[in-house]
Length: 433
Image (cartoon, rainbow, N blue to C red; front, top):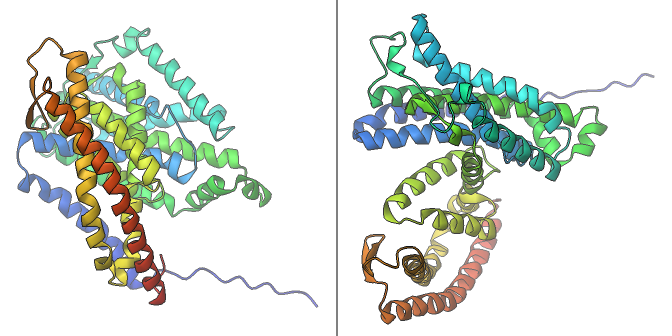
């Protein structure tokens, strides 16, 4: 008697799930459209434009790191090459008066990133882990050094500039004002976010997760992990090229900094700080890192140091990133038990803040003596004036650091106890993490 195999198809999404899905993206589109009406200044529009570019770039990097488990130190290669080709395309189209509007130029950057990812990715993705990371670093250094040698294409240290207003006008828009560029970047950001989210729901997205978790089992069931890594690498290169093209359009210039280690490091920081385990994580990280970079650069001359210390703190104490921290509290919110841990958070916040202030005071004083020792010791950092030459400054800094650390250790132990009690109560209410 022959055996009959029954295959049960996965349940189709309910009407409520579909409405929730579409409502989320419609709400995102409405927020993007309304932001210029709330924050109408030029600096705000520029900041929003940078955030949009960073979101696309970070989500493209998450295809490698979060979805497929490939740590890359050279993702800026495809971002930069997409930016350079976009700038050259603007110059060529503008000089020949071809009927190509500016909103189509990011596609050129995306195709450029895709082509170079196809060219370089097959060898790069043969191995994963440390080997892939080192190969990506070598490719990045090779391309970055070539940018200073091939001056005809890359323009040397000065880069290549263009005038975006020379292209065909679309609905009367010249894309000269920053608000028009904001809407262009916002539209592409929304399109790319939807496309990359849809990619995570495809069989390729699921198999990428499987390759990340257990490549041996993927190979056992008949799939080639190398091919899956290569396809994910190509998609990541495409969206990175779109981000690079939007950046080139925004600044009307592309230079060797687009290809450097700084860009690769920044997107790594944004993705990891936001949380690689969640699709929304790189979005949160891109917003946070962009605002933090712009804000700290106005407050202190050594903002990169604080940025690095914060990144180390996230790795040490919050490996799931900022989104992971927020998601940890979801069971408590659903069980209505968040109020049990909030008081302990508030108690621990005070000594932790004191320790951070003392550390910042010590850093700014050391920077003054090592960098600006000939200048007036009465300096201002983060809007707070103090005398770097006064012994009182060192005493206050030491007291805040040592006292804050000792008290914070005790208070955070209490936070852990409160967290365990609240989590146990949530499990009793059948609310799982």
